[in-house]
Length: 443
Image (cartoon, rainbow, N blue to C red; front, side):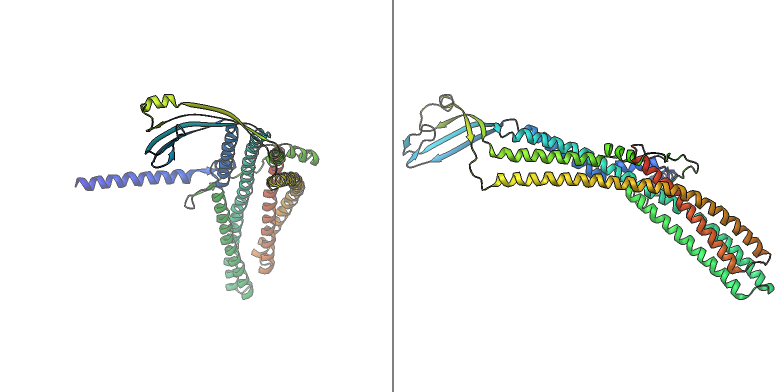
């Protein structure tokens, strides 16, 4: 009995917890700002960019440490017999020898053609570049979220339009059936009304599927589980849009000044210039400071182990100079490669600036066009709605055929869809202009 009560209690607690978690998930309505913030923190691509930045930080720290001397400890124990050299006294012996050697060695590079200094500077530039590349990924995910979010809202409103059309066409089928029974219309008029209702039902299903597809895309950008519910917030119909009386060239110059991809391309050039300096350093000599201390013990000597370690203690310090004479043209090839990479980085910067100009110009032109289109589409929708209402009244009075009513309904539907599309495109392109002005994306 006790076991039954325990199991029942555990089941109740687990069920309650699951229900609370489900309620919390289902009750959350995501705004655009919520989606952007969550995606930046959880998106895999952004996380990968952050890890690349961490690797660059490690490389920079490692480059700075290359100025420091290294330090190695060594120890050896050997046994020998027959004709041999005593490793401690360097004397020739024929007896069995037991010898021990210990030591500490260190090397420090004093000069290496400024390669170490230039490597540190290059790694610092690469770290700064990774910071900007991380911002590029954050901006990309922000723009992707904006686009999919608005597409989701568009498809959600399309469902309402399709459902309203279906409800209207189903009423028209009932009217057509009554008129068919009364003998006032032909069978073809009735079947046409049925066909229109079936088409509208198909459109409802298609609209719902489009909505779910965009929800899936949004979940993927947010890295949410496919099983998790996602509901997004609608936007204010009367939201203020950016003033389009702005200079397009000024907009471009603003974007060039702050966009991280441009800053990253500049740093890429500087990093490749440092790579050239590093390569040129290979023509210069390398000067190193070396030092060591050590001691040893041999069984040939009658002194004790500790006495021999005191007696045999030795120190050594020296300078090592390496002068490159010929290394199979490896340094020459490295200089040539670095020179080509600088030119390549400069071309990449030009390409990045050209791409920004293309995006800014496209967004500006689309924003101007979308603003004009939304005004025209709204007027068209209003006129089509009035025409459809008049057509419905005529149809009810028997003064309009089913074919003409269907044509009027389709015209109104197309006008609604055109207005809906132009409305969200208008919002999208205005938000893009906000972004290129350096402002936050916010609905």
